[in-house]
Image (cartoon, rainbow, N blue to C red; front, side):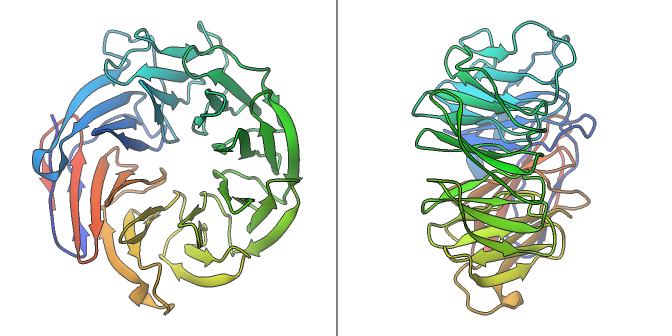
Length: 377
């Protein structure tokens, strides 16, 4: 059963009392599309919910794997699933990618899983899948240091895996048939997706774990060497760098003009296209999840369980930039935020998922779980 939580108080403390369940083996990332919410849960399942909004509430549609299929254990999901056509694609800690029919919740109903069979000793899939519409491919980065490419519809392997020098936690950014991603070997790669060949590579001073951002002819990628890099998509040459005080773990986002880069030092850095600092704002805790843009501003998740709405146009550098600050209780947020309209979907380490409608002057929340129907504000 599910529950609807609503509040129009600022600041607001909102929490659901019961968990989706399981051990801490993932980050509980949600994605929303066409009135449905799909969550890769920490207890090794994918759950689909019908989202009827803040008035109508939410209800569970299906769970994968179903209870009868006890031999399937995803072991947890770290990165956001993607929805393409009739399928939901999820990478799991057990080393498999699943293409699940979004209506039935089955891989047997037009879906697939890869690799086929029951291979042993698979490396975990920490990064999320990415879709290439030009070649109709799903890209799968692996802890084994390889990038795999499968036909989105059939699951057939498109080309031999692209090999890097270490683990890949970076979800690829796809633009015009090129995939951009980082590796633990400290390099940013550009790969042509029609054939899986390297276009260029650029080496930084640290691990690249976040999803790159493609903007204005550049790939923006953060590194564990505390620097943010802007690399030309044409030839892989560096255009500019910007240094923070800690790792750039989560991927940056842009409104088309300004680049917003989260850092483990707790700051969001707002940069122009030339890498000049426009402003920065300290949320008071490390930032592991990618932020999200909504019409009201920039939504940032602090690792300590707070959701902060920032005014992206304010000229001052003080606390006036914060339009709201929502504490989720005794939990952490590590999964990337997912935005749709005025709403942001948040998966947290207490095994819960919240939809937060963020507008200036008000915050409305629902939270969902599969157990007891209780919600405390």
